[in-house]
Length: 201
Image 1 (cartoon, rainbow, N blue to C red):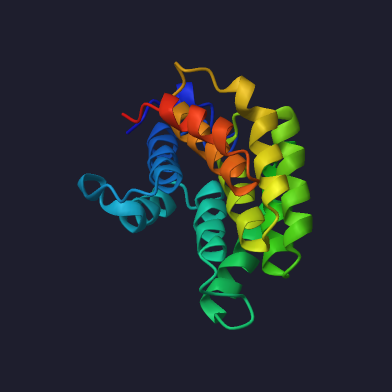
Image 2: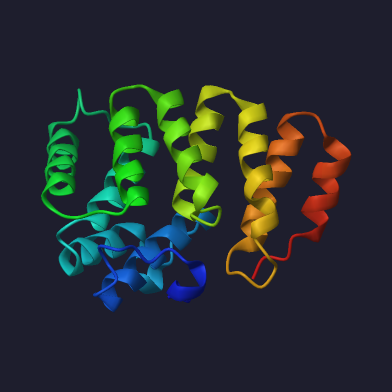
Protein backbone atom coordinates (compact mmCIF):
# COMPACT_ATOMS: atom_id res chain seq x y z
CA UNK A 1 0.00 0.00 0.00
CA UNK A 2 0.99 3.62 -0.47
CA UNK A 3 1.16 5.85 2.59
CA UNK A 4 -2.50 6.70 3.09
CA UNK A 5 -1.89 9.64 5.39
CA UNK A 6 0.51 11.37 3.02
CA UNK A 7 -1.96 10.92 0.17
CA UNK A 8 -4.51 12.85 2.24
CA UNK A 9 -7.42 10.76 1.03
CA UNK A 10 -8.54 9.09 4.24
CA UNK A 11 -12.21 9.94 4.55
CA UNK A 12 -14.34 10.83 7.54
CA UNK A 13 -16.34 7.63 7.09
CA UNK A 14 -13.17 5.52 6.95
CA UNK A 15 -11.04 7.20 9.58
CA UNK A 16 -11.80 4.63 12.28
CA UNK A 17 -10.77 1.75 10.01
CA UNK A 18 -7.13 1.74 9.00
CA UNK A 19 -7.53 -1.36 6.81
CA UNK A 20 -10.32 0.30 4.84
CA UNK A 21 -8.13 3.39 4.39
CA UNK A 22 -5.29 1.27 3.04
CA UNK A 23 -7.58 -0.56 0.63
CA UNK A 24 -9.16 2.67 -0.59
CA UNK A 25 -5.65 4.00 -1.12
CA UNK A 26 -4.66 0.85 -3.04
CA UNK A 27 -7.66 1.10 -5.37
CA UNK A 28 -7.11 4.80 -6.01
CA UNK A 29 -3.40 4.33 -6.62
CA UNK A 30 -4.03 1.63 -9.22
CA UNK A 31 -6.68 3.76 -10.94
CA UNK A 32 -4.49 6.88 -10.94
CA UNK A 33 -1.51 5.01 -12.38
CA UNK A 34 -3.44 2.77 -14.80
CA UNK A 35 -1.76 -0.24 -13.23
CA UNK A 36 -3.26 -3.46 -11.90
CA UNK A 37 -1.17 -4.57 -8.92
CA UNK A 38 -1.65 -8.32 -8.90
CA UNK A 39 0.21 -8.62 -5.59
CA UNK A 40 -2.78 -6.82 -4.04
CA UNK A 41 -5.37 -8.70 -6.07
CA UNK A 42 -5.71 -5.94 -8.65
CA UNK A 43 -8.40 -3.29 -8.56
CA UNK A 44 -11.22 -5.84 -8.46
CA UNK A 45 -9.65 -7.74 -5.59
CA UNK A 46 -9.01 -4.58 -3.60
CA UNK A 47 -12.57 -3.37 -4.20
CA UNK A 48 -13.99 -6.64 -2.88
CA UNK A 49 -11.83 -6.40 0.23
CA UNK A 50 -12.73 -2.72 0.66
CA UNK A 51 -16.45 -3.42 0.57
CA UNK A 52 -15.94 -6.12 3.19
CA UNK A 53 -13.79 -3.86 5.38
CA UNK A 54 -16.05 -0.82 4.93
CA UNK A 55 -19.54 -1.98 3.95
CA UNK A 56 -21.05 1.35 4.94
CA UNK A 57 -19.92 3.98 2.51
CA UNK A 58 -16.74 5.09 0.69
CA UNK A 59 -16.12 1.65 -0.73
CA UNK A 60 -19.40 2.06 -2.60
CA UNK A 61 -18.40 5.50 -3.85
CA UNK A 62 -15.14 4.47 -5.48
CA UNK A 63 -16.56 1.17 -6.79
CA UNK A 64 -19.56 2.89 -8.40
CA UNK A 65 -17.40 5.69 -9.72
CA UNK A 66 -15.00 3.32 -11.43
CA UNK A 67 -17.90 1.39 -12.96
CA UNK A 68 -19.47 4.59 -14.30
CA UNK A 69 -16.21 6.12 -15.50
CA UNK A 70 -15.46 2.89 -17.34
CA UNK A 71 -18.36 3.91 -19.68
CA UNK A 72 -19.18 0.27 -20.32
CA UNK A 73 -22.23 0.31 -18.06
CA UNK A 74 -25.09 2.60 -17.20
CA UNK A 75 -27.81 2.49 -14.57
CA UNK A 76 -30.37 2.15 -17.38
CA UNK A 77 -28.80 -0.98 -18.81
CA UNK A 78 -27.19 -2.55 -15.76
CA UNK A 79 -29.58 -3.43 -12.95
CA UNK A 80 -26.71 -4.38 -10.66
CA UNK A 81 -25.11 -0.96 -11.09
CA UNK A 82 -28.47 0.73 -10.63
CA UNK A 83 -28.93 -1.17 -7.37
CA UNK A 84 -25.42 -0.27 -6.23
CA UNK A 85 -26.08 3.40 -6.90
CA UNK A 86 -29.37 3.25 -5.01
CA UNK A 87 -27.61 1.60 -2.07
CA UNK A 88 -24.96 4.32 -2.09
CA UNK A 89 -27.57 7.08 -2.16
CA UNK A 90 -29.49 5.46 0.71
CA UNK A 91 -26.33 5.09 2.78
CA UNK A 92 -25.37 8.70 2.12
CA UNK A 93 -28.61 9.84 3.74
CA UNK A 94 -28.32 7.48 6.70
CA UNK A 95 -25.01 8.68 8.17
CA UNK A 96 -23.18 11.93 8.83
CA UNK A 97 -20.93 12.89 5.93
CA UNK A 98 -18.47 15.67 5.34
CA UNK A 99 -19.27 18.25 2.69
CA UNK A 100 -16.62 16.70 0.46
CA UNK A 101 -18.18 13.24 0.74
CA UNK A 102 -21.61 14.71 -0.05
CA UNK A 103 -20.18 16.33 -3.18
CA UNK A 104 -18.63 13.06 -4.30
CA UNK A 105 -22.02 11.36 -3.98
CA UNK A 106 -23.76 14.16 -5.84
CA UNK A 107 -21.18 14.08 -8.64
CA UNK A 108 -21.67 10.36 -9.20
CA UNK A 109 -25.43 10.84 -9.13
CA UNK A 110 -25.12 13.47 -11.88
CA UNK A 111 -22.81 11.22 -13.89
CA UNK A 112 -25.22 8.29 -13.60
CA UNK A 113 -28.02 10.54 -14.86
CA UNK A 114 -25.95 11.44 -17.91
CA UNK A 115 -25.25 14.97 -16.73
CA UNK A 116 -21.48 14.76 -17.10
CA UNK A 117 -20.71 18.51 -17.17
CA UNK A 118 -22.62 18.94 -13.90
CA UNK A 119 -20.65 16.05 -12.40
CA UNK A 120 -17.44 17.86 -13.37
CA UNK A 121 -18.70 21.06 -11.76
CA UNK A 122 -19.15 19.19 -8.48
CA UNK A 123 -15.70 17.62 -8.66
CA UNK A 124 -14.31 21.09 -9.30
CA UNK A 125 -16.03 22.30 -6.13
CA UNK A 126 -14.22 19.58 -4.22
CA UNK A 127 -10.88 20.54 -5.75
CA UNK A 128 -11.31 24.18 -4.77
CA UNK A 129 -11.08 23.22 -1.11
CA UNK A 130 -9.19 19.94 -1.46
CA UNK A 131 -6.74 20.35 -4.37
CA UNK A 132 -5.00 17.07 -3.55
CA UNK A 133 -8.19 15.01 -3.72
CA UNK A 134 -6.90 12.60 -6.34
CA UNK A 135 -10.24 10.85 -6.77
CA UNK A 136 -12.01 14.08 -7.74
CA UNK A 137 -9.11 15.05 -10.00
CA UNK A 138 -8.94 11.74 -11.84
CA UNK A 139 -12.70 11.40 -12.22
CA UNK A 140 -12.92 14.94 -13.62
CA UNK A 141 -9.92 14.45 -15.92
CA UNK A 142 -11.37 11.30 -17.45
CA UNK A 143 -14.82 12.85 -17.83
CA UNK A 144 -13.49 15.99 -19.51
CA UNK A 145 -11.58 13.72 -21.88
CA UNK A 146 -14.72 11.73 -22.73
CA UNK A 147 -16.58 14.99 -23.38
CA UNK A 148 -13.79 16.35 -25.58
CA UNK A 149 -13.39 19.31 -23.21
CA UNK A 150 -9.63 19.52 -23.51
CA UNK A 151 -9.27 23.10 -22.28
CA UNK A 152 -11.20 22.30 -19.10
CA UNK A 153 -9.14 19.12 -18.70
CA UNK A 154 -5.94 21.16 -18.89
CA UNK A 155 -7.09 24.02 -16.69
CA UNK A 156 -8.55 21.76 -14.01
CA UNK A 157 -5.21 20.11 -13.32
CA UNK A 158 -3.35 23.42 -13.79
CA UNK A 159 -5.27 24.89 -10.85
CA UNK A 160 -4.28 22.12 -8.46
CA UNK A 161 -0.81 21.38 -9.83
CA UNK A 162 0.99 23.88 -7.52
CA UNK A 163 -0.34 22.01 -4.48
CA UNK A 164 1.22 18.73 -5.60
CA UNK A 165 4.74 19.06 -4.26
CA UNK A 166 7.41 16.59 -5.49
CA UNK A 167 7.52 14.80 -2.13
CA UNK A 168 3.85 13.76 -2.39
CA UNK A 169 3.05 10.23 -3.56
CA UNK A 170 1.79 10.16 -7.16
CA UNK A 171 2.73 13.80 -7.83
CA UNK A 172 4.63 12.61 -10.92
CA UNK A 173 1.39 11.23 -12.31
CA UNK A 174 -0.38 14.55 -11.73
CA UNK A 175 2.43 16.21 -13.65
CA UNK A 176 1.77 13.68 -16.40
CA UNK A 177 -1.94 14.61 -16.44
CA UNK A 178 -0.97 18.26 -16.79
CA UNK A 179 1.45 17.49 -19.61
CA UNK A 180 -1.26 15.54 -21.42
CA UNK A 181 -3.72 18.44 -21.09
CA UNK A 182 -1.14 20.84 -22.50
CA UNK A 183 -0.47 18.53 -25.42
CA UNK A 184 -4.19 18.16 -26.16
CA UNK A 185 -4.47 21.96 -26.36
CA UNK A 186 -1.42 22.36 -28.61
CA UNK A 187 1.06 23.66 -26.04
CA UNK A 188 3.56 21.12 -27.25
CA UNK A 189 6.77 22.71 -25.99
CA UNK A 190 5.47 23.13 -22.44
CA UNK A 191 3.95 19.64 -22.53
CA UNK A 192 7.28 18.13 -23.54
CA UNK A 193 9.11 20.14 -20.89
CA UNK A 194 6.83 18.81 -18.16
CA UNK A 195 6.91 15.28 -19.52
CA UNK A 196 10.70 15.25 -19.37
CA UNK A 197 10.51 16.23 -15.70
CA UNK A 198 8.32 13.27 -14.82
CA UNK A 199 10.06 10.70 -12.67
CA UNK A 200 7.76 7.73 -12.23
CA UNK A 201 8.61 5.42 -9.31
